[in-house]
Image (cartoon, rainbow, N blue to C red; front, side):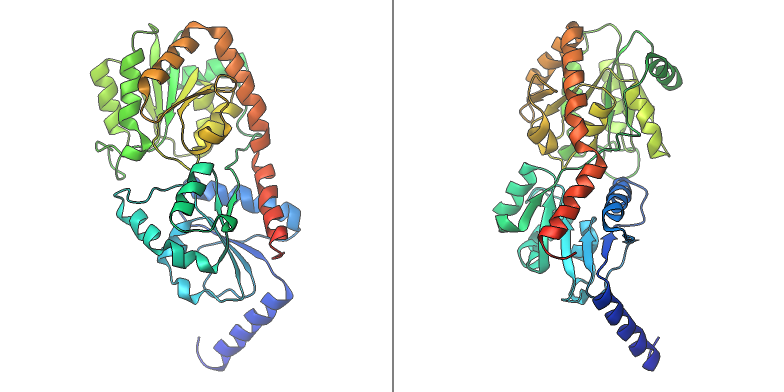
Length: 361
């Protein structure tokens, strides 16, 4: 569109923006984690604003609007210079380490100090991410900590019958002690034979090697793509596993409901969501001290923590849970209590309160 019609369209957009400031959530079209963040946050904000929160991929023509970049890639690699100065811009930054060796991450860090000058607030989900950004020159007052959430209506503890059905469907013996690992931890979207170090698949295998004699029915349940490295490692160790690639994300609930324990061996995360999803399904968690576990796990009360890479300590924790059902139940109850404060609707309320505090709505 060119000429007078283009000018009139631009004028219409300008007048509409001045009359009604609306929150727009920038995500992408992929059917993965960012999609669900966008779904829950936009829905929670709509309930509070009484107005639609569009989920979009291209915010560049907006004026006088609130733009929440839920996916940071468009912000750093899109035509950022086209964002009109009348917009109030917020950026979600869940995780990332400087000098990680990841070319994409390195490019974002290189742009970071100058790029955030246009941003009202950078939203992080954990204290570790806040420290990383401050070390890279982002002022502390520009950073807001709001955790990731979980849908407590969907993720819930199973009845004995539901657990039995989940195990039968997933081919997990009833007598097994089943440990879960639901993530993408291989490089690329193929078999995943090359490990993605930040996700700690090597540490997960080291943990499994340390505990393989602790229970005669030790079994591992895997979901997610690119798990080849872990699968080959479990085969070498002689530890039985099941791997289910789920086309429908909602089917993961039954996977949690089949577990006895969830293990997180990552070196860095913004979440992971597995922490909250496990808790919501009544599954105790052992984790490395990073991401949201470092903020939310109270060691020995609602989970167990160990230093990153300390699989010897994590193994002792797992064995103690295998040998002590009362301790397992204690952590289960603690996780269920803690996760009540992490429902997505409550998290959306924190975003709404931030927008109010910043005076943009």
